[in-house]
Image (cartoon, rainbow over all chains, first blue to last red; front, top):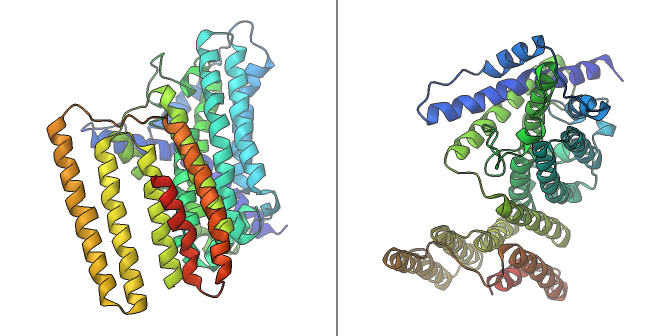
Length: 315
Length: 139
């Protein structure tokens, strides 16, 4: 483990933690401008977090340590993904950990921690949100794995850094049918996992439609700040994974300071553009009825399956 | 390079076939029909370039006019005149037809493997699985 490699990991964590609320702010600002509103500015999520962090965490009576630890587990698991995944550099000393299975199970760990916390409050909304979140996660996680398999089949490794490096080495492979199908599958799953439209509306507290917001309804003050920051980081991590798995150009392959600096700028630009595109897309659609969401996810599962079979039969 | 573009076009055809099963709005399905017509014409053009054949170019033009202009135009007119039918009403629900499509595509891959094995040197045959798969998905 070299000092330069450690710097690479630290840069990556700093970019994800510091940039995630800015990404959320950017997406809200794009939406506001397209709807003809002035918007609160890109920095608003950070200002909200600062306000919440100063406030006392009020916890409902009768909740156990599960409720208290939920936000921390969500934050910690996302932080680990931010440290190990090949966002800025593929030459990180933690690359051995950045396995597809490990990253997907870390994502699932955060989801499960939050659903348990939602159940622990014993309120109707907490239970409802948890039930819906688990339904979606159960349909979405296999598709992430399948889309990942389609990419890993041609590299021969389920290590994320190897997949990114393999695509960098043979750029023509991006235009294969397997990658095309996997990209569609991955896009749908990222939208479902990050709780964006048309699966979940991140801007509403309407009782009948909310999923993520229903689970975290009881959190206040510091706890809420941790949940909000972790959710923003989750969005940044999912968008970062999708840009780097399918459009990996600009990722540093060494730990030289200049390479890291350039890769950080390119990564921020790529994720920002993808976030702006997603926000623009969201302006034109409405949330789907909950009973049609399995249809959406079944479709993305099919794309994942076709991607894997294409990469297997045409290899 | 030729094989890769061929694979990509066939992948696009498969993708548009599955998207057609997935979407319910008839307008969106007609739009996908246009995409499929363009891709089919591209396939003919690709083969025409490869075989240096004028007939294949003519086939491509015919497919483009029929599948990407005339047929969608007629369908759009029907949609506009009928008015009330905005969404498709499939016989089985979307989730099970998607699963059936997945199964059929896998069967198509399995069926076309002996075909590919017949002429392993001819890389063109690599597109056979896709063509068979598209046939199954559309039916």
